[in-house]
Image (cartoon, rainbow, N blue to C red):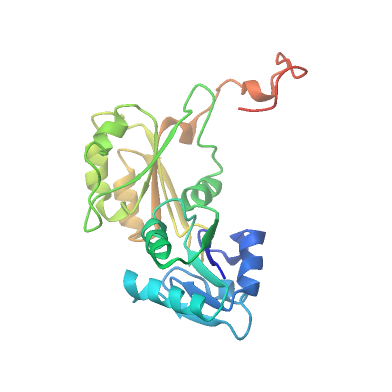
Length: 253
């Protein structure tokens, strides 16, 4: 029997992948983060499935529940908000499952930054404007950032930034970025992407903090900074260019 780490997506139940939905439909035990999982998503589980809200459980207790369910011969769904590859705490769960001899696999999900970009109707990689994206977070009471992974170091590249877990420190974020981006640099905040009450704010580095405070945004929000957010007049991508030799080149970016 296997633990299936499943990306639950950014919030809306219909943004889970088909594979994730099908796995939920055959799992006898489902562990989910109650504060971030919509009730509708759990309706994909069998009626007799054991549902375990992990919101108030620590890591050893969560792993213990998975190991117990495995011992009963259950297929186990472990829902993770967004996509398991970032900010999901999956790595430490995998480490403990390895030690316990419990097999697992991973099903990706729609990450929060992608859902937020969709609401903005913006591509985050625009030809000759921005071809890189730094996904990072702010440091508060959470786990310490590695040395060198600072906003200043990322901002020196001038690339597009997508910040998780930073909305309550947005003034500090703006202050740290100002030496590298102008006050006129486009910025945006997207809160509760795909969920009831979602909010989208568009502004500049110089205005976005005040806009966020005025809107009362304090949780589940992404902050974006970069020229791609308002890019116009950029050249078309070479991907679909009429000058490209398609007979001898595979389609790729």
